[in-house]
Image (tube, rainbow over all chains, first blue to last red; front, side, top):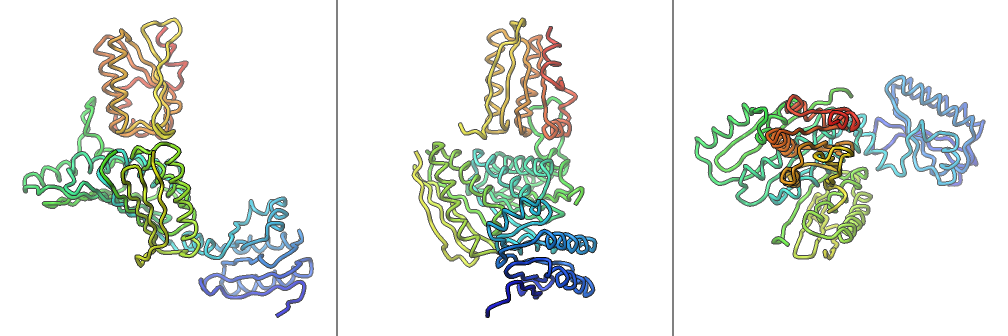
Length: 265
Length: 93
Length: 119
């Protein structure tokens, strides 16, 4: 189908029903503003507040149209909605960047990248990491930096990432040093979304007597910090940083789990 | 060098994670006694393995196995169904 | 050593022969805490009595690393000397505080402040 030089179409987004797609084709100038504004008004009327503007087939976008999109953005965001730009051609992207558009609108190179961000941001989609690692202390720095990095990449603050780094470090070292992992491995399960983090560190161990199990449970229940002592601070530190800490000690397995709620969204 | 060791990682497919995944492989390689150049190569190969996979598997879980053998790192990437997406090898010095 | 490991260098302090500056860079954790203790003991054997630990470029510390610092602090005091720490970043200071080590360690805001107490 050959489309007219300047075309504006509104379509549902098949992969995400809550998002509408504004497809623009060709050279988009002044004459498109009325249509774009009317379409967005209609969306707002129908309580559809998320818009993806497909620029992949656009050669030229005039500044008044950019201004109109800014207005649309304001209207949608006032209702906790969103607007994003999809796949502008490199030449167009360069011109838009000169106008500062990239400072206001997020760009996505393809719809999968957009969907990943959208579902994370607006549908509380979570991310997860599971690691099965040889019980070797040399790996711990790599593990904690990885987890801190994942958090930073999804908008957690450096302080929040640092705190999780501390927790991962202490629990991993605890599993390696005190867990005597029988199969020389330990595991980490980590999941997070925009508002909370969950982490569990587990290791197998030689069969623990009931008394030994209870001693370990007591250490987790009441970790104590003796001022001036060189050791024994790790679990106490974890307990203070985490929002909640639980543990499970069985005859052949020890698992410590924490939850950390974000202090501000 | 130690006896062969394997790290298994299951991670959500998300392109923003890629820099940290490859850094992890580099850091782990150094911890296993690889020299910085080999660790850097391991990072490049991890990037190569994942970049393609993240594009074609936009959501779900990807599994990376890092098997450290004497002076060799074998990287294997699988999708959620256990299908092999790719392998790479890096010689460590 | 890669650039993510901790670097520790020792320098003289102008006009204070029995003091040394220990400059930390990177992460202080279970993989390198023992090295810190060894360096401090070695300095004590040389007759060094005062240490000024520069944490300006120290990004991260864990409980084992803090244990090494407390050990160093204890050893310097037992020898009749002192250990001072300066340039601690917010995140590291929070960990020191949570553990309660801030009441045991002499912490200064800047290296100039710390060194001034030696003269």
